[in-house]
Amino acid sequence: MTKILSVTSECAPLIKTGGLADVAGALPLALADLGCDMRTILPGYRAIMDRLGKTKQAAGFKDLFGGPAKLLSCCVQGLELFVLDAPHLFDRDGGIYVDATGQDWPDNPERFAALCRAAAEIAKGAAGWKPDVVHGHDWQAGLTPEYMQKLGTDVPFVFTVHNIAFHGNCAADRLDRLELDPNRFTVDHFEFWGQISALKAGLMGASKINTVSRTYAEELLTPAFGMGMDGVLHNRKSDLIGIVNGIDDATWNPATDPNIKPYTTPRGKAANKKALQKLFELGPSDGPLFVLVSRLTDQKGIDLLLEALPELLSQGGQLALLGSGDPRLEVALLEAAAQNNNVGVKIGYDEALSHKLVAGGDVILVPSRFEPCGLTQLYGLRYGTLPLVALTGGLADTVINASPAALSKGVATGVQFFPVTAAALSNAITHMHGLYRTPKTWQAMQRNAMKQQVGWEHSATAYRDIYAAVTAADG
Ligand code: ADP
Ligand code: GLC
Image (tube, rainbow, N blue to C red; front, side):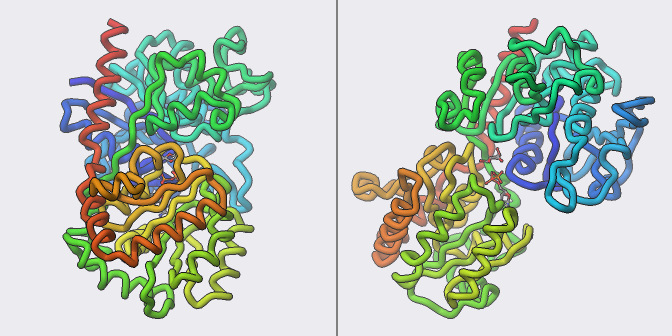
């Protein structure tokens, strides 16, 4: 049995701001079926400490970047966890990355360095369970190989890039405070344009790197998508692969979903659409109901949707949207809802409501400028809610565009648009309207969508193969 320590800043169902949590929460369960024992180390944020149930102290630290800390082990809904209880770093109100005003916590470098440092101690055996592989996610886990090196541990490190936009950089004068080796503050390790970069540390320290779709793995090597790390990734190109995310298909199953009126065929969507229209105060309509569930950021192309809204509405369409994030986008969306009876917007984060949107919508929108994988289009497929997506990253890999060829072969599952502009999005919306008005085609697409394999079976095997490769190389 291969033992893997997953190092992550979020993990569903305990703490989530985006898809990273879904992946970190689902992967251990999928890997268990493949003979892998994956345990997860997670920061002990205030929001999760009272939800851990019975815990055991697995290790202790007298001073972990400014205060004492404990490593607690516990099991939550089948997930074996190490929770880093470090009150001086994690016991506070506000978000997990940002304070109540939306600013990054000034001590984020230390907060996530502590996570990495504790992970390295586990790798050395401090918690009585020694992994064969350490698997880190995004910059928050990036310094792990540096601390492993410092502790003299040679457990191989696998690094997953969920989003290259976040580098976790800080000024070089933090070297001491972060207890990093100044001799490794070089271009070959974690120095990045004069700064300390946790992301680069992860990329350089990993035996293998993966990202969450094949197309994004290719895009990452280009200046347009690499966000400054494309050069670093070019150097690591032979160790970089794309593994598309799956979804938790027990939680996202239209036949058993407790948040909706369950269904197994597209016909069952009608009752959910009606309920959703009521919830968003939209009247009945002959046109398609477009839905969107997302963080509201520049990445997600919400501004493009606002520009394309007239096209969506002019042909009898409706929009129901759930999201939170950039205050300017929130205001613009609420204004659009106030001006149009056929637009409903809810600002906030609401897991149950997100299921109702996916079940009740006809079309799920994902107009992202870049999208490493994207999960909501996968939910849409499973629920027969056809994805309308930008042709980028995982969206390119998981949706089959309704081109004339795909339609005539009967394999289309959605509509893709390129370039990622408001004009191309408007055209795609018109295309969707046309398909919707042809019920036979529409229903065939829905059936195709619902048949797609969107679970973890295939991708969990790909991760297992990476672990096998790095442990074999190591031995
Ligand atoms: P990202 O990780 O970039 O935010 P993903 O599509 O990979 O994008 O994952 C987003 C996850 O967060 C999905 O599970 C989605 O349903 C969920 N989500 C995003 N915004 C909200 C919200 N406002 N309410 C409920 N769930 C949300
Ligand atoms: C990131 C990406 C998203 C991906 C998720 C999980 O947040 O933005 O595309 O699905 O990570 O890998």
